[in-house]
Length: 262
Image (cartoon, rainbow, N blue to C red; front, side):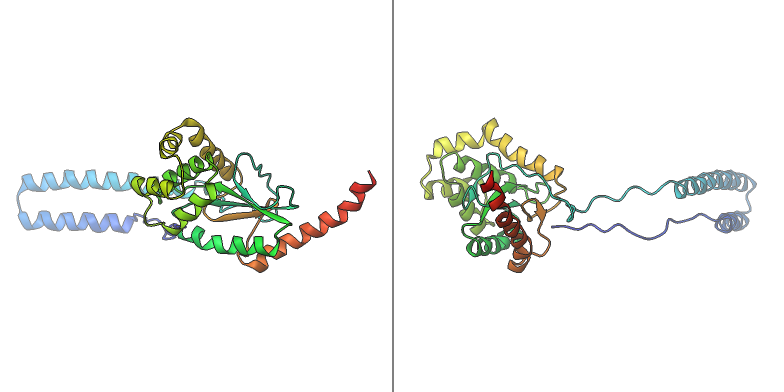
């Protein structure tokens, strides 16, 4: 992720003293020349410069009285539970698991590649209680190959090989060109002609775009962003997963007898 820092330096203010100093310098230059015609030209230039400086100073003053722009949201609200429909997204783990981990990810993001091991640990810790859902959020402004990679995995999903393509792309983040992705499709046994047609199809593009729009509605700004039953994972560690998962399992266990009574 890339973090941009705005400059906190105060705006430059054009003061009366600065204008008078400029006028004195112009007069000094005129005195060194001695020509009346040159003197008149310099005085005209002086008046023009001072007029522009005055206008600039007024503009700075007006700008200083404007209300500050509202702060841009930095990401999902940790205290909020987000509705994250699964839709057509690929998943691992039991479909009826009480805990759903949703990860918004980018195949060219090195942090996402590192996150794969952590998510696998969470699934190993909760093999029957949790499932993982993969959502696409390619950061196209900084990762030019992230969108083609996302489309490739959806096309592979159409042939039942999403996770195989997913693993190959993360293992080869520096080799995500079209020819390389096509070779990965052959390696995992895809029908390559169908694969290429699906990548170019409107349906595959729409599936990726649907994930992107869901991410934006949920406040996602970077990758990886992980939710546990709609709650943002802030502590990216196995303990962080447990802190969110255990209360969900406790709530699910306490709700089971009540459901049985009905």
